[in-house]
Amino acid sequence: MSAAFSGWTQKLTLNKITQTIADGLVQDIKSTLTVSGTWQPLSPEEIALKPDGQRSWEWFDLHIEGASILFATNDRVIYAGKTYKIMAVKDYTLNNYSEYHLILDYQETA
Image 1: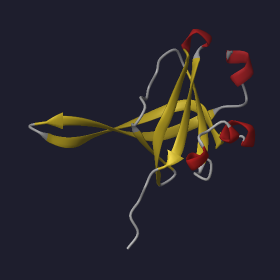
Image 2 (image 1 turned 180 degrees about the horizontal axis):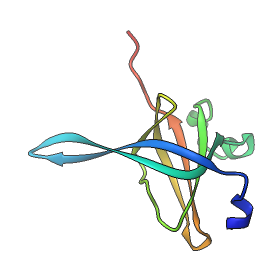
Image 3 (image 1 turned 90 degrees about the vertical axis):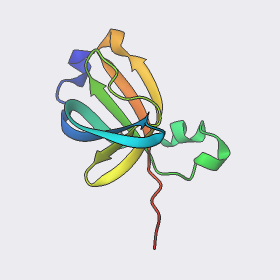
Image 4 (image 1 turned 120 degrees about the vertical axis):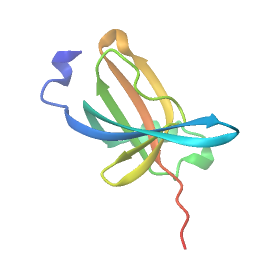
């Protein structure tokens, strides 16, 4: 798959937020990752396969080149100043990439 990704990917700097429970409290653990990948809106055909109540959400597709899974479902990612939530993880590491479906994370408004 490296040939397919050639010229298609770019360096992306992502801030990963995972949650853990320590002393009965939920804590965010943040780390910064620089990866080679693509960030694009999910296609209308893929959105049509989502449950009815989720189709109006703002969905994105993240492909990351490499032979390891970097995110898990419910992790959050900060990219270009916005926070997104990982909703699906697709493991294609045998082909040297992974795919993630993300939505814009819920944010309270004043």
